Image (cartoon, rainbow, N blue to C red):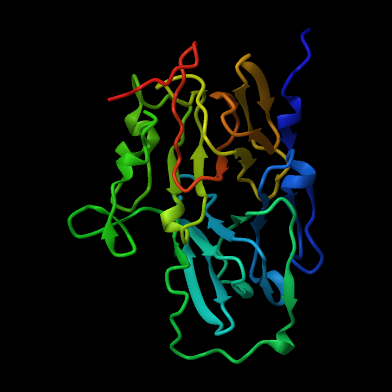
Length: 344
């Protein structure tokens, strides 16, 4: 059997305690420098199973790097329904933001935040935190040193937002009060922007067919870009999946000008170490195949060919999220000779 060339780019996620004082539970914790071949990012993925303090365990934090916090539904068919109420304080003004839907929060480096608390718990949901650094660090501010909240402060309005596209009264997709053209971001032929409902949720299987999606793609998908994330060099998606088959039909391999990690995870809070499915991915020009049935990370350096993704079997719905270090998602399909495939 030929040895695997890219096995170093395929990693099972590590279930463990996070940094001291950050979480009160075990979770998947992955740092780019130590665990992901020097990827310029780190992340945590875990579940919320009740009311109480989520993070940090005391006071506030400040990071010397951009940070994104995502709170996401694990309920199939209800990707925006969180299952609880979450509150977070942002800034030394301690502006309070509260939500009960899937939300994503972009915190520019140096932004103080904390006292993330869960209430009105009904059912489990997931969270994942993206740290745009290969090595985690934080300045901790204990509760005893926090300033009093500033009533009426709106300095950080827009940092916390629904994890979905937003539309104006004319049906145009909004950002910062103005319409933008998201079709221009979908320049790869992947076709996700053609299947967005009025809530801003994508339904890839509605665009299933030649040049579009395959039967293994997501039932529901949330995807935001840098201009919705305080201008970060980042786009991030979260999707629910339950069918077997190839994910895309517009091409096989594609590449990105920036590095990314692809993360396949389970949605069962009582069985976090299994995804409930097996997913196959091709890595490199050699079309080397790798398989995951446990939560795993596929690391894709700049301009590294990867895909197709194929779901081989499914016992229960599972999830997939992406951390791509680019404000857009330039991802041209490539033919067998390495040439870009153009789609109408």
